[in-house]
Length: 236
Image (cartoon, rainbow, N blue to C red; front, side, top):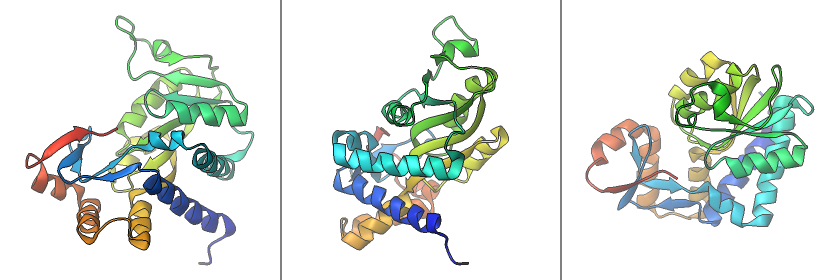
């Protein structure tokens, strides 16, 4: 099948984002201090996507690509609000909402102490029937994202889409967590894109590329072989 214009732009955009992540220092290979994820997995490579925000020209280029993706895959004029998941996704959600001229709401990880209802996890105005785009920085297996979508759905919002700057691209569980909620994920880049750019530009030596490649192909096995053998730090 011959790729259409958007398929080509999508691929070029993903490679561009991956290159920016590497060149701005967002990607860090550190075999002596492994990255520890909430799922229990550890990896030899860290991603600190918030560093992109410190580079205005790069930030604007990534944001332009994000808006093109939203327009192409969701549709201009289809959304009523942008929802920021508490954490690293907040600045990206704010930038997208500002560019699109849409209301911005904030979804907490948990309700304040003593409050259990969904409305106490949402800060800002939403209305039943509104189509809301949930925005995060990074997605791994999708479990945490499903938790953020739930209070919006309970408020009567139509949540069909999750936008992320970066998706790991190695966890089958992500569809298991999002599909039952009717949510489609849209991601600018994955670890596979980063590895491709690293290979092309010789940003990493052979040992680093080999370790990352082994992790991406079988993260559970890599974790079993390396957990406990080295220091680790929580994923950003």
